Image (cartoon, rainbow, N blue to C red; front, top):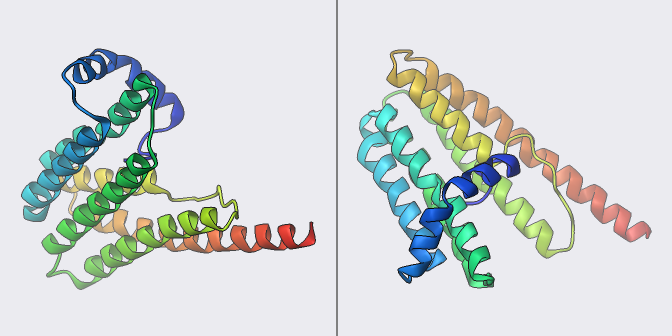
Length: 204
């Protein structure tokens, strides 16, 4: 699950999990298997707990499952090989995990229309944010910008979940409206960057 942590944090986490990485490789576990296992963990946290409003345990389970993003990448590097299919699987599982998280929270808030609207905007705009970058990259346009990327989406959702779980009922709705606005802004930000890159390429 790409970009959940910054590069500096990833480096620290990789070092902490080196024994686990080596153990998994010795046991014959593949990076792809870890990627899928992490997504299953997110599904359990989101659907099993988040959809029922148990946001604290849901946040813990999802966060721990997200650590597989670091582990599978470290395993691939340790093996000295990374495949295009592995990259595709990783991105696909990211979309599945994101969909599960936001759909589960939306299910819980189905009786609160305005919070539900914010969640649906966040879900759709978040998918578009990722799509714009992937499509731009395939066209040779660099759009390495983004106010709200996947890391920020998950962090804001986690903060909202913890705040609500600890008794601040406005925590999740506030986080979702902030996320919705930031995600829509990021779509526009990336589209503008792509347009500029296209014009620069044409001028060159």
